[in-house]
Length: 423
Image 1 (cartoon, rainbow, N blue to C red):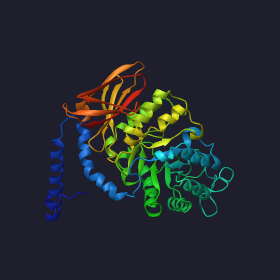
Image 2 (tube, helix red, strand yellow):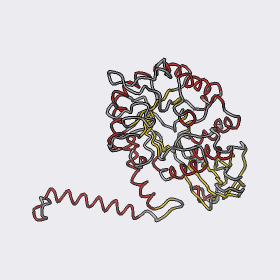
Image 3 (cartoon, rainbow, N blue to C red):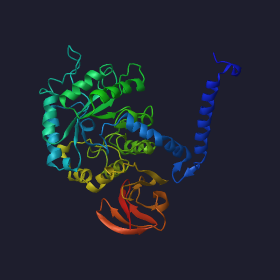
Image 4 (cartoon, rainbow, N blue to C red):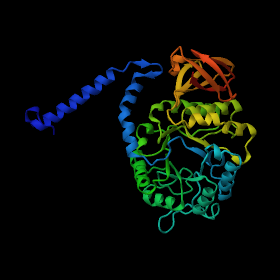
């Protein structure tokens, strides 16, 4: 029961005065933020101001030295689903090296769901599926490491994984992280199925704590699907967090994931990244233009670049997209600022973001079904109107000069991508 004001003690009154003063200060700071600045709403700016301290806290809370730039690699799920085995993983590691993709930064070889036996052993530990991974995960990690690559694995913050074919890690968090560490695992994707009615925060906090203690060298990728706005809390728990449901290999799915992820741009940074799910480039459900847009927007948005196709049998078109080192460099830029949508008119969009050395990355994205001219205004991308730049076309690999704005005719569902360097 609350006490009447007449019975409050001096010390309690003092505490309440301090709290009230702090509230006034926060309110005053928020009031100084304009209702809208460029494409940022007042709400977003107030949130960004509040997070200035929060980001520092996040770095203190979960700083394992990993993910200074968005993770790059390959994941088995989008193309193979449960149809995986140790030979496929070995061949994929070989292909990443032989194609030159490994040298471009694609370092993680990630096994998704369905790698384990249906039940744990008598000690309660994971057991690799004896038919598909007969040599065990430790031997596979050794093979991948010998190629200069890193091995990732999958589990779930529930009683069973999403396939229902293997156990989840709920209430086995410490034991499982110790197992993964003993095998030499470098990356954990942690899914969100079969939660036993327990809260997201409880389940992911338990695994995060286990990782901090026993898995300090393991990249921790939370796959909560964006249901509880993980961008607002997962920075203290892991190195990346899914902001969306699973992607599918079609234009509608890809574009919607880009839009959903864009909302959380200000929460990303070195050590912790927004994840709109893995790449579908090369899986056959979209056109070359659509895949080029997919890769460009993911790169600009500092999303993980995790290849989801069969790298052992890529077309030249697929290889050309995935191996564009100039686009990859935008994704891996040391400043770590997520680009976002800054202009939009009837499906004709400009996405942009800052890069190191005062440069800007810009994507002109045509989401319409017809060819159209798109113009990026300097005011939208953070440049003074008088600024002259050298514009580097990252897909044409050519350069030209521009001032005040940048225009291009863009084919349907395609994009143009540039890096602007002030002269």
